[in-house]
Length: 235
View 1 (cartoon, rainbow, N blue to C red):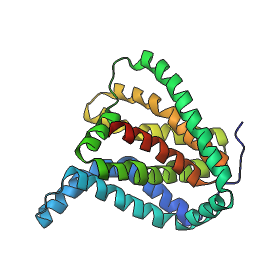
View 2: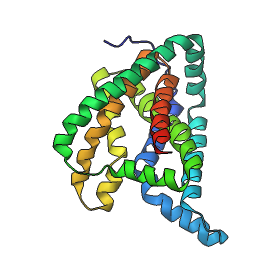
View 3: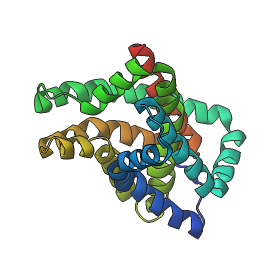
View 4: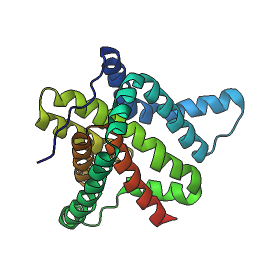
């Protein structure tokens, strides 16, 4: 069983802003970002490449997330600094669990998903090939921070105050949903939602690492390490 530690709580303002940011990141921005960038291009006459759009998207999200949760981040950073080696130990255990359970689940999911391509992985591979350095910054640094703050720090942390099982279920399911729903919508085939199964183990391990380490930086470091290894394999 995970060694539970007190997790840094959030103020009412952070909870309110967190709900807005989670909704924006999960649903609103994926539907409106292209139109917003198109409007910027129309008004300025600039032509924004895909790499510039992606970088701007995540830099803005990073800044908004850091600003919205500044007090929480200060508290969870103090927690991290007070037990650095313990947190790093939790991250190492998380890596072992991630790849061990990931290998097992991949074999089992191969029976369910058959030859269905993971379109999220394919999209990231294409971005790494087109713009390796800017994509690496997004995938290894910016996205892990934003996603861990929203899905673990905000969603898991706040629900855990009332129900630990519900916290795991909600954070894992919405994290998985984030990575597949756009492809299901674009391809007009909700069978792509089956690919959510591929993200349940990662979501579970990230949440466990956050809970065990007692600081958001535990799951951020794990997420960054996993993504970094994946990007390095593509370079």
